[in-house]
Image (cartoon, rainbow, N blue to C red; front, side, top):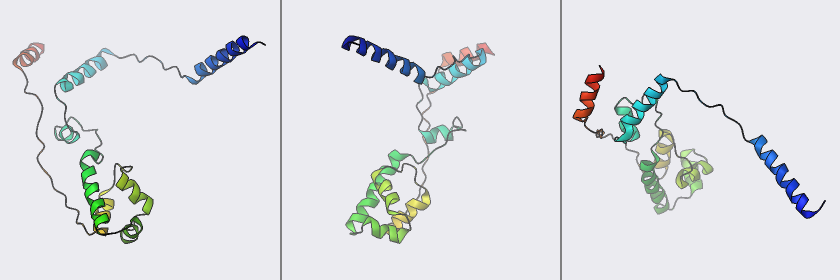
Length: 158
């Protein structure tokens, strides 16, 4: 077999293997009701881009599972890490004080644990001489006001 024939045979074999690995998914057959429901959801969020908390507070996120909102958590963790370093504490010492294993503390400080429990945060903060304080604040409603044309259209559809 010459080099050209070998390359052609190899390409054919690779193509066959690729086709075997790719799974063929059946086309989803949406009902008219499904399409209407999806259209309503798209229309609702076209001009409204809520935070996870606002989505839950509005009742639109009943099945939404809010994990720790990492964007808000990051500065908190940086503050505690800074307090640990300022106190001259090693991860090993914090681990001994808090009862949290050292790799878990490292993952927490480096951002690889995006959903720590309140217990973990409380133990970590206390071990470095900090107090964990929780507060709440009102969630601002950012939904756009319904326009007159939408209200008129909705009244006509009734």
